[in-house]
Length: 158
Image (tube, rainbow, N blue to C red; front, side, top):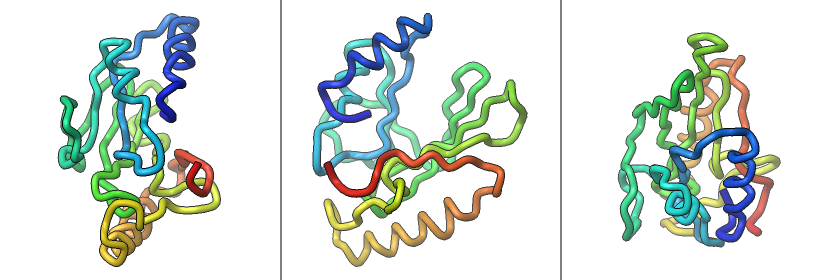
């Protein structure tokens, strides 16, 4: 969820739908803007969730590759997909009311509409490029063909 000043949209939408916000999952630390995830979690009392090696100086729930977050009928499996940033994660979502198999993957900034996440923003570019290639070709492209891929952004930095 980006940027910092748009949390009211999420709070109001949840309220209109009669829903609570229990978890806020940030796929990575952003180099080109400030994420509103922490502010949203604080405003709603939700659990802030990020990858276990995220270099943050504030409290959050740490998750690792393969960890599962259960939200009623919905199961979210964490996929560590470094490359854009070392701590980047994608979220493989299963809605058990639809069936036992995953339905879609939220790719954050690993895979965007028309582009992939820049590997040069926070790490050594050569290492990040290799990680990004592995995340794309050995993780995301190995998902079953029926899984919908939902990119987290349009191409380019804001």
